[in-house]
Amino acid sequence: MNNGEHHYDTHLIWDGDNTTDYTTYTRQHRLLIDGKPPITATADAAFRGDASKHNPEDLFLAAISSCHMLSYLALCAKYGINVLSYEDRATGIMREDGKGGGRFEEVTLHPVVTIANAEQIERAEKLHERAHELCFIANSCSVPIHHVAEVRV
Figure 1 (cartoon, helix red, strand yellow):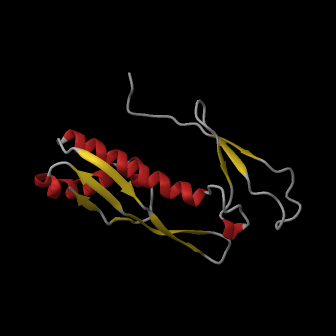
Figure 2 (cartoon, helix red, strand yellow; figure 1 turned 135 degrees about the vertical axis):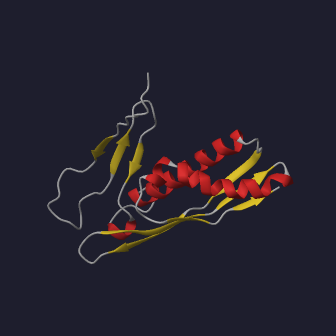
Figure 3 (spheres, helix red, strand yellow; figure 1 turned 90 degrees about the vertical axis):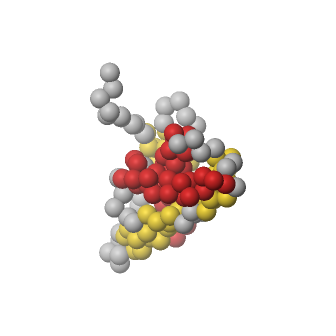
C-alpha cells in the first residue's frame, strides 16, 4: 500500500574529461531517467553553456509550468470543466548575487485555457489558484510564483 511517499531517481553524467581551465571545459551533461529518453543539458549560455541545449533554468521553469497544468487539468476534470486547449509561456527572473551564486526572484505563468462552456469561465479562472496550492513543484519552491491566466471559450 502506498503511504503517500514517492521516490524519484535521476542519473546525471557529465560529458567532459577535465576542468583544468574554467573557460574551456564543457558544461554538457546528460540526464538519464530509467525508461525515458535522455536529456542533453548544459549551462545557460551566459555561463559558458550551449544555447541550443536545455539548461537547469529552462528545466526549472518547465517543471513549474507542467506541474501547474497537470494540477489544473485534474481540477477541471473533477469539476466538470471541459478544457479544449491549454498553453503556457512561463517566464522567470534570476539574479546573480555577485558572489558566484544567485536565485530566481520570481516566476510568472501565463496559461491560456480554452474551455467548452462559457458559463464556467469564472470557476475555470479561480481553479488556477487552487491548482497552485496543489502543485507539488510550486510547493517545493521558495520563489514567488505568479499567474496571469486567460480563460477563453
